[in-house]
Image (cartoon, rainbow, N blue to C red; front, side, top):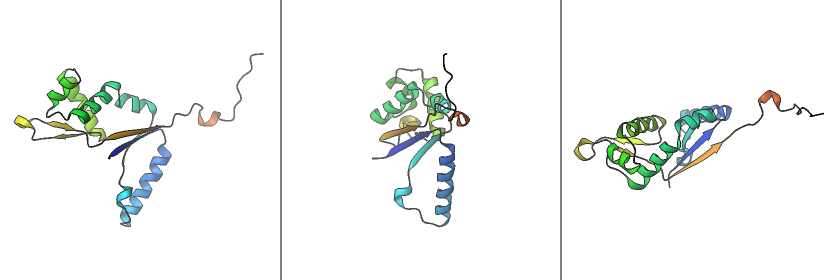
Length: 139
């Protein structure tokens, strides 16, 4: 099973993981188990803007029904072709799906190369500087 791991809100950890990955790649120490598909969003707002409920529905429909064209993908989710085309382009840029040429009649076929998406959202409720503050009392 191929899983896409989506994380939100931990830029420091992403930076550290990226630097470690680059170092191991330079030293040619990468193992097959190190090859994980990860998509990192810096903020919750970035995540919500990119993975709307309509886009998640589109991803799932493509994974389940494997449409042969963008038009067929639009029919699966009962949406306008131009809106679906725009969403597919956005999802391709994110690396969530691929748009492959050579479908029937030269159509571009959307393909989701994952069986599952796992999401981890780090959503701090307190600002970094406010962790030691005490709430005001209602005296």
